Length: 157
Image (cartoon, rainbow, N blue to C red):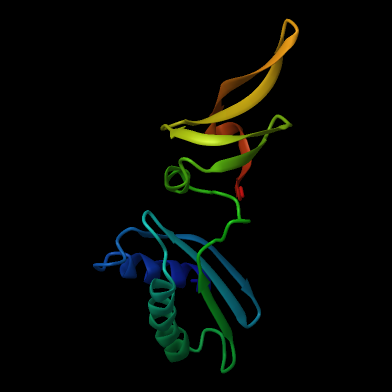
């Protein structure tokens, strides 16, 4: 069994505990003696939760010698620049601006206003010419999950 599979199993057990039930694994990256674990939660992933999960995993890594004597373990949230992977990440980001790269080509940007079983809805404000005037219009775009190549939350100031 690979280290990633063992870590996943340990995290599945940890996420059954009180205070961690809304947490989920997003990704694991391993490069020689560095192990990066990205976790998220349906509420907020805090530094304290990451620290507790790191300590929990360290005991097994040390005990079993999975990464040798010297290693780097980083447990963190995915961060703003990382793509959304799971539906529950989309739900958590309702009301935020997304940039969606489509599998068929092109991009769609807008405010995430709804998440359904098979699609998301983005709302986009555009200025269009009507007669001699330009007016603001709000367009709603429905994007199927299976047409999303990559979706990233964009910071707005």
